[in-house]
Image (cartoon, rainbow, N blue to C red):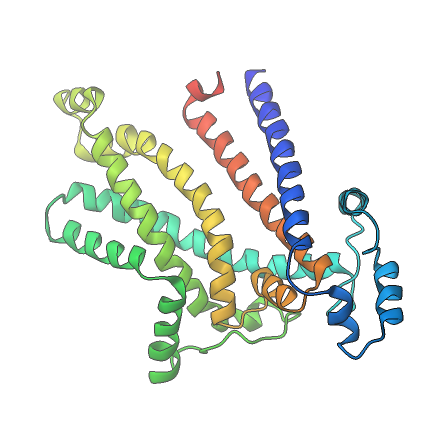
Length: 315
């Protein structure tokens, strides 16, 4: 019962957060420079044509009414029509979200187990060559922005040696298997960024847990080091790592915008950048709302996993 109460509270908090985020998204879009009507009709349009288009798009109505209509339509699944592509926003955003999700999930599937393994090995070989090498590589990876990492990978692996496609400029409707080679470089860019954060956090958590009294007691009982690490230390050390994974989902969302732009990958981040450049308001608002909802759901999942691993959090 306490679990359901805990999840219910988190869901109410998620709804409140999304309500606040929706207000912020709508407000920020309204103050973007430029006139949507002018962007559509061009600077040669007459004032009468501009006024007619503003009335058609509802831009002449009060902001509060436009916000209420937008939220209501979003809840009903009526996301409007893209001003740039002249297609319904909902299938466009969901299609691009699927492409971004593939990139993000593959990066997480590679980075999370690898980061945990490197963090544990680095702890076991503390102050040895392996620990120092992992520390140096992760420090460099944390310090270098994704667009530089991506550019270097394109120059070296894509252009210099020709091992992989240097660009992910592909048909957004292409199948996953057909675009697999084009996913390697953008995925590798994200993995390097994720790996650095999570490896360092896992190592720090393991070092902290290994100093706990129950770990010393387990060692004094004569348990093998492998049993002490895997059964007693690792589970508690993973608690902060779960939070880092959730935070990195938000990092992935932001990082994917950069990576998708560098590699010309047809995902949600690139769609949003194109929409901002062309003042495609319906796409901007819904893409931003979907990104915010994804981040909020990732944090909700992290809270639930946290509560499962540490029952004290439920109270």
